[in-house]
Image 1 (tube, protein in one colour):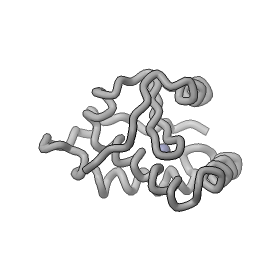
Image 2: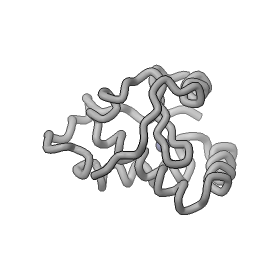
Image 3: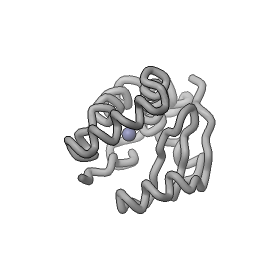
Length: 120
Ligand SMILES: [Zn+2]
């Protein structure tokens, strides 16, 4: 399955990484996946992570750039990061869609997968 445009060393993803205090971040802005602390190759090696971000791309398309950001930030303020409805849906989509992005490889184990930040 086609993966969205990927931006490495993104200053936006770097800000999110500092805010979340995690070593690496992938975040969606519009139709692009922005990375910080992780290379394109490392990111693509985790089909669960790719499927998670592709769900955010779909959410962006559904709600529009502003609609997505407003709902996302509102959800963050109201529920905390881990329980933002868009994040819950993206985690579900990751389990459902990872096999689409596995590129013929076996799916990584729980230990090999990128862990969603469990932060507030
Ligand atoms: Zn997410």
